[in-house]
Image (cartoon, rainbow, N blue to C red; front, side):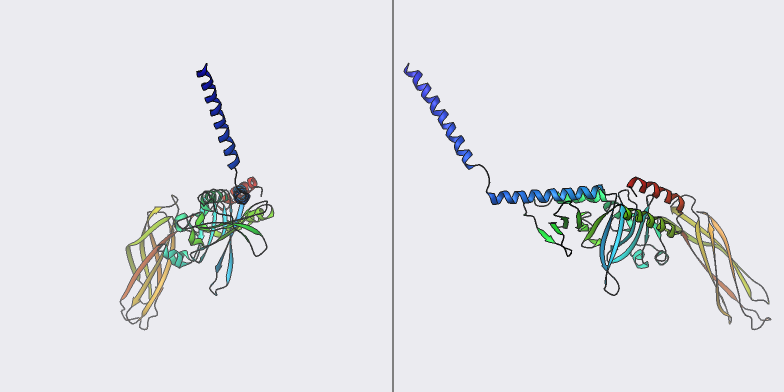
Length: 373
């Protein structure tokens, strides 16, 4: 019997000890009201950012706005509009230069200065600077059709935000128009979203969507969704842009030309000299069968008669040799005299990209019908 009483007493004492621990833990649980407010503010910011990114993700199209200084130092606003399917039209500030961009039917067309093309190693830079050029994203520091697609931009921004310090207290600021925004910053730049619902992305640093080369597009890009009449206007402008591209140069095709045979005939007592030149071309890349535009220049020189030149051009099939001719006429001071004439030919070639304007327009029409335009 005494042993039984000791066992019961030990059990009771243990129960009291456990109960005492429970009471002590309950009394210490919870956080201070000030800390709870900080937690709530951070949660509120995360909710606003996610809501804004979802709105960007679901937008049928958006317009990006950037500011660049013109030659006189005056700020100029550039607009670049793009659908979630990748059709785009507008201008971008690439390394301080204005680059015109059109993207449609999975083709990219750029209009830039000769200096820009020369910096990208294209030998036809002087020509390319006079017209539109069909190319691909390698001739831009940033693949803008991909990274600025609203769906892709939202996804990339979401990833960038997730890597930011979640314990940082939210920072609010007001824009010049009075709109209050969250400034969500990191080492790559700042994302701004409205504090008030419906939340939307106001702007972001391009480095957030392309850490390696985004800075070439400047420090900030402002963004707005496009819908209704604004979306229809984008379709109209894209339709006009495709019609205005004409026959763009094809930077995706490399062509080399050479003079493989030349012959000159001069008519006695008349002063007319004709050059017949065989020009060979070699093409790498491009659309199969696209013709090569050949341009021939011949400079004639004659003792005591001076110099004259003539030019000719022709379309040639790829990887063929084409016979081309041009002539000049010298004024002869003495028809009975003999003059020695020399001809120096030079040739160059270019490839123009074929654009099925009506076909592209029909595809744009179908695309915008699905977007609500």
